[in-house]
Length: 357
Image (tube, rainbow, N blue to C red; front, side):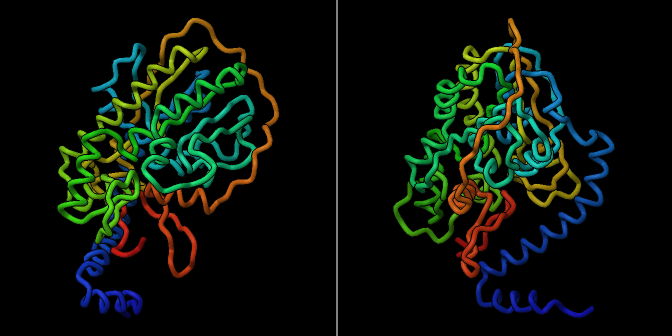
């Protein structure tokens, strides 16, 4: 077998840079595990669970999407009245969920209100009657801006302001939590501790003032790298799920018709049940494990149904793809390619090589 010259060059560089060598070896190991996962875990999962639920064809007037919300954690926390079941998601990542669930359809009886920038990077034009983005028009990478754009209170405020304008439309309301950026005192204290003790910085809700030796998008990546215990990241995840559910419960009285609470996909919290799992934390696009694919389906009691009508899509303004890519970079979906001067997608739970940002 002829050695791969590119790989050899990387190993030679890595001999003088232990950090780079570690990343090279981790990436190769992940690639091997991903191949094994596709060949072994995927067919086992599909035989047991099937391809997933097409949520568009289900019966609802309002669909609340929680981002990266596992069924088991949701079941242990939520106290909202209703009938709770579990369903299988068609995806293990938001971009894949949008591609499989929305793209190629004409859902002109539906409005999509989203706090996830993948809406702009992945969603086809003309799918919905209208698309409302809660994450703003301009990206400013600071703590206050992230608080405003991605905090569930902001999504609640936007929906409360515009909901009556779409009284004859189905509404999909996409919250960012329990996906990062992680809010709350536990997360803030842990970011500060890692910055002070390990010189690690975070792109999401970055409170550090120094020049860190390593940057992660958020705490989930630091958990994958071994800086955070499984117990601690699970606590932060649960706290953020509780946070978003506070605003979901507050929003429910404003919604008319039948409301269902579900998720686009789940999350790995150090407990993948797959035989071959490329990652233990976060969510990659092509993973087939119950922790990533089993999501809640909570049908909330209602009195009357909406009288839904179909009308042509509203004109959508042109989107600055570079601006959206910067937002996705802050959320851990993209990284900037210095040589090419462009943003490229990466796996959510794949830590960047040192110096890549």
